[in-house]
Image (cartoon, rainbow, N blue to C red; front, top):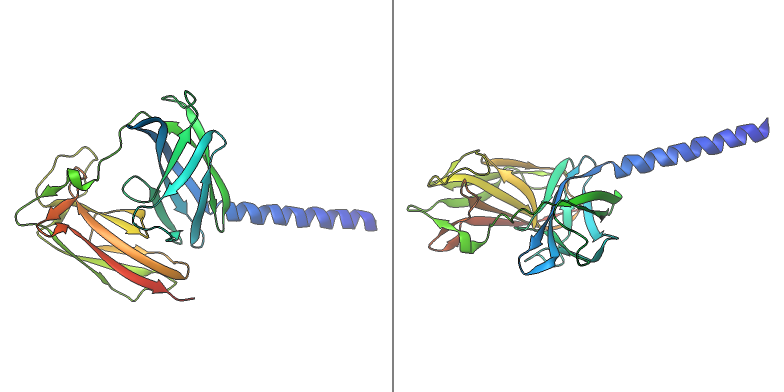
Length: 253
């Protein structure tokens, strides 16, 4: 009888451990994974995917694929910055912010086929996704593809509340600009569009209004940046440069 009770206890402990592990991993979901071939190299691909976090703030640590020669997390302009997905928030790995580049073996990742990718997070651990080579083109957010208008839009960023580890609410003050929610293939309308929001280089999403609530964040240093973009996704520029703003802040432990 004692042996049976011990066995039952061990099974219960194992079940609880498995449950807690699954709960932790399931806080992060990877969605809409795709890979676009680099025009300079047939074996180099830019990875695009969405990260949904239903748990506490989490940090992206590394990326790997058993089917690739090499996988790198790229974060132009934010080298060394932690890539944090806020609590109950979303992050988007895309070419206009933090993204992943992978080098495949010749002839192994043709259009329409899939390749596995594993992302490692500080709290959620390893989360897997399958990437499809869609054959699509990269959406061009480069300044060489910018648009200018007269009068030019202006942008100023302010906090409605001081940022804390519980989150913060951002307010965008704009002039000569109207927020407009349109389809991805919408035509340009002067001084209309949306904003792109980035946290330490990670794209959090598009904004179609002048406020945004950021979820809870881990202690650390952050740069929040916002750019104004046209309906056809080109960045607005003025005589002084890109129409964008940034706020630097720290979350205390």
